[in-house]
Amino acid sequence: MYLGPFPDESRERHYLDVFNTQKTNEDDFLPRAQVKKLYAKGELHSSDKAKLAELSKQLCVAENLLEDSVKHCEQLQVLSEMRSTIKKNNKLKTCTNSWDSKFSVFEMST
Image (cartoon, rainbow, N blue to C red; front, side):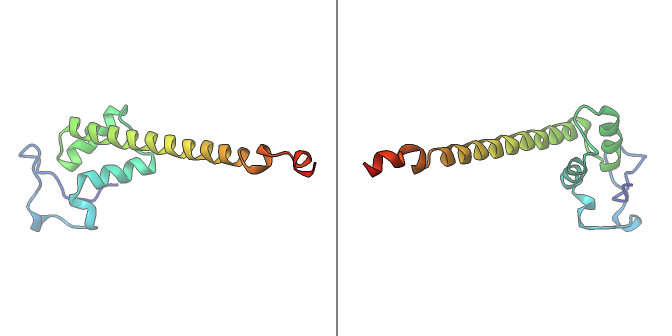
């Protein structure tokens, strides 16, 4: 449940006065931090338009900006997975290219 700054229903994309809202943590007024947390929990995806529309009203941010932010998080995750796969493959390559595979023990003994 979102307990951050409350949107002003009379004005679009505006918050209520700071003295009329309750602050629960440091990230209440940081929409990108909220999006990042929800994405990390697996509760938010760029294909979930209903959730983006609801979150857009809660955070007082345009829906297209939220969607772009979520897509950015998805791209970062894909790139992270690619880097870890490449590292794993390089590690396997270096293990198979060790000196044992280059030199035969029988050739060295003769």
